[in-house]
Length: 413
Image (cartoon, rainbow, N blue to C red):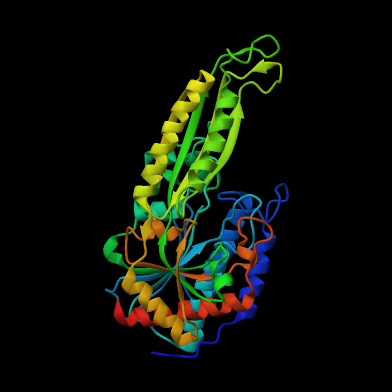
C-alpha cells in the first residue's frame, strides 16, 4: 500500500519547542535527565499527546509511557514504534525526542488518513534511556525486555543512592519491575526513528539511513590504591601515587581505542581522596568505556587495557582493580531493515546503510522482536551537546518513512 502521507510538521515543531522548554535551569544546555522533575513533567505531556492522538495510554512501574491503538485482528502482536524523551546533562533538543514525536505523529497521521491496521500499534516513550549516576543505561527498555534486575536496580551512585531509589523518588514503583516485561509473542516488530548523532549521512548527502547494527559497549571502573605520603619529602622514585597511575590509565584508553578499527574509548570521571597538592594520593577511581561493532573486538580491548593497567601498576608501585560490564553489539533485523529501506524508496530516498556508534533502546528491543532503526542527519555530526541540530525538513522525511514502514510491516510481519 502506497499513500502520499501528509505529515503535520507544525504539530511536530510545536511539540519539539514545548519539550525543549522543559529543562533544568541549574544545568547547562537542554538538560532533562531521567527521573528529574522536568522528565516527569515531560512524560505527563507526552501521555496527553498520545491520548489526543487516539491512543489508550498507560505508564508502567518504571515510567515508560505506552500508548496503544487497537488493530483489526485482536490476536495479532503489536507493531511498536518510539524512542525516549530524556537527555544527557548539557545535551540537545533532538536526541530521542525526534523518535517520540515522530511516533506520535505517525499515529496521528494514520488516524487523520483513516488508515486501519491489522496489528495493534504501540507507541512508547522509554524511560531514562540516557543513563544515570548509577551507571545504568536503557532503563525503560531493559524493563520491557526483562533485563532490568536486582543488580541494575541496586546499582548506587557515589552518595549511595540506588537506581531503585531514583525511580521511587520520581513516583514510580521499581519493586513491580517484573510487571513491565513484555511477552515476546505480543510484539511483532520494533522500529525507531532517531537522529544519527554522527556525520555520515550529511557527508554522504543522504537524507535517510537504515542501521545495520548498534555498537557494543564495555564499561569499566578502575580503582587504584597507592600510599599516602608527604608530597614535599617523598622522592619521585619511591612514590606510590594513585593519581599518576589513573592518569596513565586515561591516556591508555585513548591510545588503545585509537589503534583499532571502528573502536572508540572515553573516560567519564576521575576522583581521588587526596585533592591537596601537598599530599600524595593514596586512592583514585576512574570510569570509562570502549565501544565497537564487534564483540570479539570489545573483548580484545578489555584484554589490552587490563594488561596495560598491570604494566602501569608496576611503574607507579600501585595496586589496581578493574571491574567490567559488557553490553554486546546488537544486530538489526535484515528483513525488517530491508522493508524500511523499501519504505524510504517509496518516500523518495535511497537509504544509506550504516553502523550506529551510539546505543539505543533498539538494543534491548532486539532481544524481543525484529528491530530496525531509521536515521536522519545531524548537522556537523554534533550530538549530546547544546549545538545538536537536525533540520525539520529532514525530520519530516524520517516520519514519512516511519509511517510508510508501519503500513508495509502491517502487511508482512
